[in-house]
Image (tube, rainbow, N blue to C red; front, side, top):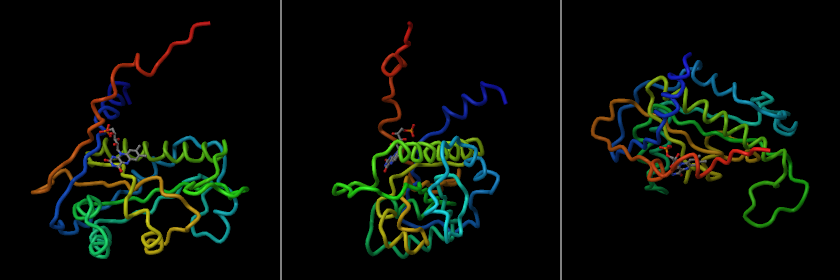
Length: 212
Ligand SMILES: Cc1cc2nc3c(=O)[nH]c(=O)nc-3n(C[C@H](O)[C@H](O)[C@H](O)COP(=O)(O)O)c2cc1C
């Protein structure tokens, strides 16, 4: 692949929230395995802790897990969540061809965590989380290169224990994001983009060349 093509795909990836009150008919679409597999080529420093591998259906060493819902499952989940949520998550579950709940796998906690802490702030956990983030970016770029609109959301209601239970996600995993993959043809839906997209500014704001 040429470096120009790679740069084009990186620039083309863009937050696109495809929002509709009315659910689209379930398209029979999802993400193909060939696209999902590209996520696995992200770097990862250490295997996930054994606690995540024992007695689990998912036994890969990488410190992330992807739970993939096709269009039909997105519509079902939308229906089930309608009573408790009216956020954009509902409007995106109405349009998505696929939604991926991405979790990362923290090491078991050795100390009592301060209130509101999701995990112990160790170097290993930082690296597990970083590796999972790299896997997400691979997937978003792969989707972009296949003409699939995408969006990395914090998840809102999709972080709830009820949704974890419904999707069969172990409670010891932490949601890194809910990724929405939407069709090119957005019919009457609206597309919202990110306010931060154009705020990146020049290299000089975040790169310092260090000459010794
Ligand atoms: C970990 C993570 C969580 C995010 N969660 C949200 C979210 O909940 N809501 C939202 O509007 N954007 C969310 N975003 C998307 C960012 O707002 C977006 O990537 C950023 O503004 C840059 O825009 P761009 O993706 O179009 O380049 C999230 C991005 C990351 C990396």
